[in-house]
Image (cartoon, rainbow, N blue to C red; front, side, top):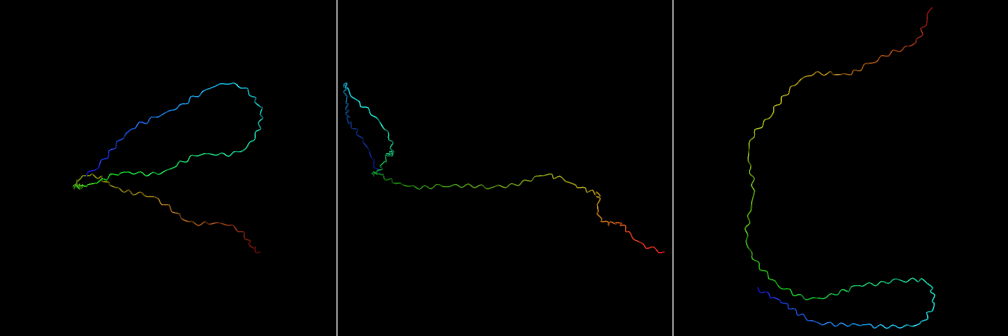
Length: 135
């Protein structure tokens, strides 16, 4: 596919600039002037404050842009995919382990048993009895 090429050539043109200068002339003269006496009386007047704010103006300008057309040509290439699989290996090993033998000996120890028995309490009460005497 042939794509057109664009070449830009810039030409610089020299524009002369003219500058004008004004030279002031100074002349000195003396003059006698009568200055009247002035008395000032102040009066306070509230003056509103005015602010000037510059607001930018937005202009939209349309610009023509040349967009080159690009043609894509795809070539499909087959790439083989290799798969790797991990297969676990099981190995059986015998191991001899010493197991300690524990022997228990029973010893019978007599333990005294305390029994609680309720015993009735006997109270003696003295009673005065008058016995009649027979003559």
